[in-house]
Length: 114
Length: 116
Image (cartoon, rainbow over all chains, first blue to last red; front, side, top):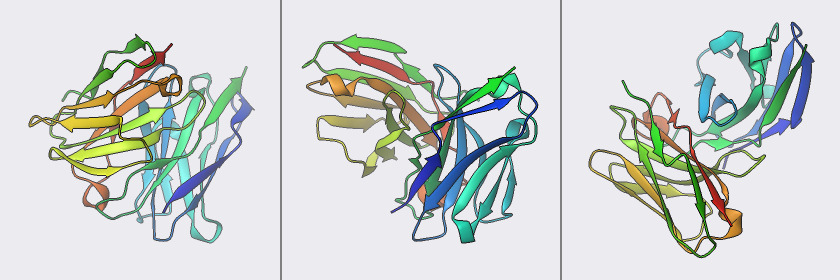
C-alpha cells in the first residue's frame, strides 16, 4: 500500500521568496509521484509527475520537485513565489500496477504574503 | 478537446435522501475515478470504472455506487445520505488504468454536496 504525508497544513512565504512544500511517501514498490494544485472552488490540476525517469522533475508555473529515494521524499519547490501561487497543494502517490490508484495527502495551503 | 465536466456544481439534500452526480469524461478517456474531498482534507478514493466495469473501490460503504456508460461518462449514486457525506465530489478521467497509462488524470471542478 502507498501513502503520502505532507508536512505542514499551512505554509506562508513572502512574495519573491523560495517556496518549499514537503512530502514524504511510503511505498513497497517504486512509486509514481505527483503534485497537484487546487484553486478555490476548482478541481485539481497536475503540476508535475515523477515516473522513474529523471529524479528532478520540472512542472508548470515554475515549480519543480526532486525524488529522493534515500529520504523517501518528493518536496515541491519554486525559486520565487508569486501572489497567484496561493492555493492548496496536494502530493499524491501511486504504484505502477494496473489496479493501483492515486492516493492523495491531506494537502498544504500556501499563503503568499505581500 | 473537452475536459471533464461534472453536474450539478452544487446540491443541497436532506439526510436520508438519495443523490446522483454525473461526470462526462475527457474525449478519448475510458476510465473514470471518483473521489470525495471533505472540507480541509485531501481527496479520498471512492471507486474507479474502466470500460464500464468497476476496477477497484476505496473504503466506502455499499450505499455509494456507480455506473459507467458506453460513452465512458459516469454516475455516482449515494443512498441514505448522512451529514458526513457533505463534501466536494471530484471526478477524474484517464486513458487506461494504473501502470498502463502515462498518468494523466484530468479532474473536473467537482460537485459540492451539502447534506442538511
